[in-house]
Length: 425
Image (cartoon, rainbow, N blue to C red):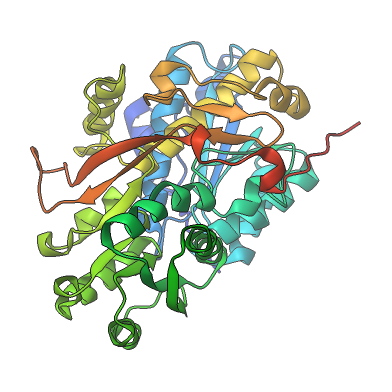
């Protein structure tokens, strides 16, 4: 597969501005927030963060928003003195949305050729797992901003891999029981056929078993499907109380659009697990419905520093931040906090410094202060359960939060996660 980066045509004029350098770097697909030539001129070596995330395909929008959040983090880090007094540089590669081979190739490029100090990615759970094997082999600190499948911080956990987003089991634990209480216990599932969907399904199955729910059927649907009509017809024929959509990105957008076109929202309750502002923005107003879990939400007027973050992102993009923007923001800051607290760029020392570490309020941006659970490297914070809405108080307010769940109450134990972490001797 071809590289997505392209060198700008022509040489850089002698008088080109710093802003122009950044714009050229962005056009090339490389988010270098401090030009390396400037750093070298000052006799400094930059600290490099490498993000290997989808910028094309099903998860392009979510991947781009994670990149934007990480860009803001690096800007703030540099404004506050950098990492160990050195400027931070963010490099970005397009992993694609579903090609594990490409994501691994890009991870190796960032580590071996670009010599990054930190690896970040991926939105796609299966790609996150594949990348984690590379970072583990190379001994590089790796932050997974938005790949949810349980095994990242579960059965295949590694000492060097930290995750910002929730596990799939936490997502299902936050909502499954309340769905059964409010709408009935008979459910039909439309599930993405890869790691993310598989572990979401396992989480729902466990909740159904615990609370007497009934699984009327599961369709495992390939990533990138555009026509959901056959699956929706089967779901309708099963006559469930709830049709559960366990997918994300463009797949969820297309599935919900077609469900409403079929009129299924008039006969059944539509719901799922995690929902994204990117998806709701892409839907027509009539398809913004159902019960979901947000992992971060921008409209939190009583939480300190949230509006500062919202304003900073709006200055960059003209839009409010999404959960994905926050994932990338936390991912970037995690790298700096690990190094500055360890007073070292040694990966083991940094990983040790993050054990049980609570994010500062201006990074955590949640009512329950997020922390990296020791022995698992999973961030535990708040989850926002509620309903999608056609419009709210302002154009970007498309989700009504009905309750905030403390992640500690639904995360289970480290032992239950299956993580048996071993450290280098």
